[in-house]
Image (cartoon, rainbow, N blue to C red):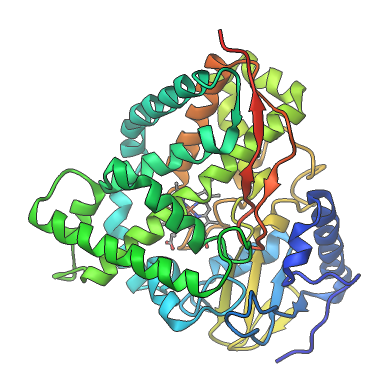
Length: 419
Ligand code: HEM
């Protein structure tokens, strides 16, 4: 394995690095991109053991430029997801829970096609009305608080949770429990959610058992939800095993919850910090919203990185990568690449090329399956908030999740006038 090499004392594998202010993170990645471009190639970073859990692995290459991230993301023949997609190697029992996101083609493609029809632009357009209904109820409930509440709790967390639970046919009374499980599964690194790594195992097992019971129930009494569809679908004449089904449910609910929640939270934070951008959006919502949504996801980059492992010797830009070595694609950095996004740290809903941003992945076969659903949720919630609570503002700093994987906000106060 290569020797560790970084610059300016930047340790991306260190949880402490991710607690620093966002502006410092921005500067660190700018320095790493400059080093790559200057001819230094990709840096090779040390892994850090998280909470005495999985032992630190041999390290990883950091793809930080927009082009390097794209190169890795689009070459699935050479770059595999099958040994995990986060920077540290997960224990084998957690890997199995990852479902399609930790599979390579052809199996990945076969299983992905099973759920794809639930996420087409057409089905998403149909789902938009139920998303709107949910969003309206959240605005109405917020009004009951009298004018101040926690934004994450009132809006950003419940909307994606309700939408994905609805799609999967998870009963309303179980939503809170699903929320707790997904918080733990993506909260490793933050002591508030995972004080001890064994909690991860307990939550993963409990959620899998729950999902297997849901699958068995839907196999006997099918409805019109995604769980029923998955239980009846066949791949090459075979049905999903109960475990495969359960892992799918866990992936969809994690992927659907922990990402969109943070895009919505960062979005409200950004609109508060940039009243000029907010005024532009409010003045002509339908015309401005599609670009604003892309810009929110670019700026927030709720999924900070994904990792691949090289199956054969190859090159990424000027860097030689040997078979077996890991490459982390820092979407966060690709989305701030100054050669692609002018004044990249600026929040600008009039950007022309936000559609090229890497927040949902950088092309390739694992590109976010729920991107259209997420866009729809973000579009609708801001429409309803800006119409129903037009002066809503964030009134305190975001309390951030400690993570190098999810750019999360745990809590953030807001105030508004009830009319
Ligand atoms: C703003 C919200 C979201 C963001 C930023 C986001 C981001 C991402 C990213 C970066 C990937 C990996 C792409 C790759 O490796 O090429 C991904 C994959 C995925 N996302 Fe999303 N996502 C969001 C919302 C959703 C929603 C609402 C769902 C629906 C349930 C969803 C389901 C998935 C699934 C199933 C995958 C794995 C696809 C595969 O492996 O083939 N995501 N997402």
